[in-house]
Length: 284
Ligand SMILES: NC(=O)c1ccc[n+]([C@@H]2O[C@H](COP(=O)([O-])OP(=O)(O)OC[C@H]3O[C@@H](n4cnc5c(N)ncnc54)[C@H](O)[C@@H]3O)[C@@H](O)[C@H]2O)c1
Image (cartoon, rainbow, N blue to C red; front, side, top):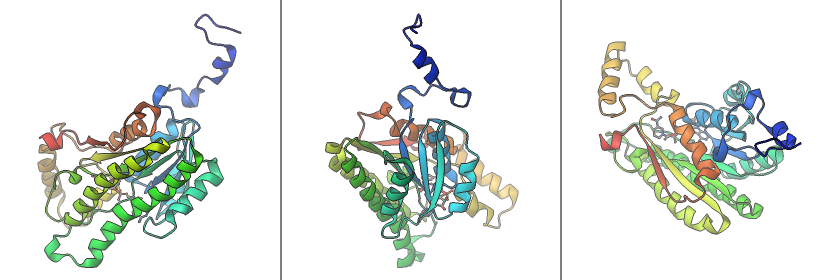
């Protein structure tokens, strides 16, 4: 049957159910299979949540698969998520993620490299092991997971999207103690551009997001373990927020919505780009 607006009855039947009542338009991720590293909490979980809402099927690769599975079970949306244990620094981590995603969902269309750590130690007090761990997780792990996924995407021949979670510290050091972190994230920025060039003939877009200060389990932990009083913590937060023109910390969802954009057809003509999402901190 043809309706007045040109829709057929089949189109009507395909319309979103109550569960998926949002029309995602060019941001739609239905039928897409995605991998999100470090997706058990924080920014990564925020991304998983929005991906599932937008219709994607997601493999969460995290050091804590139990937590990831528990959080995934509570998600509501047109897609779904499941978890597997992965340490992105281990050889074969990328191959494992690709195998899981293909076995469960038939392809790999999207990768979000989110797993990362940000220990604060001035270089004058830092040993080589800590430096190396930061680089291994934040840069080398990201590169070799990208390699495994990039190979699979090239074989599939249907394009793909890779989104790297960098940081505004890739552009400007935010505080003393982050020399290793800032170096790793500067590396992520240049890796994004270099790999974007390599993958362009395969129609794989490689972009990055540079978050500013985002409230996550990871950013809360050092404050909670610092021995500061509630008042001291509040004063420190107030000082930090005073440097953010938007007047608030970011939330994981502020990053997740931009990740949906970079993972979807809405950003098809963007590659090698860094999108800053910082409430204006860099211009403040
Ligand atoms: N929160 C911020 O203010 C902020 C700002 C800029 C950039 N970032 C970046 O965003 C990303 C996520 O940050 P977050 O604050 O959500 O972190 P978080 O600590 O809250 O969560 C990180 C997740 O990554 C997982 N993970 C850590 N190491 C891993 C490894 N080797 N292999 C697999 N999984 C691992 C953890 O288990 C955890 O689930 C990081 O890359 C971080 O550098 C965060």
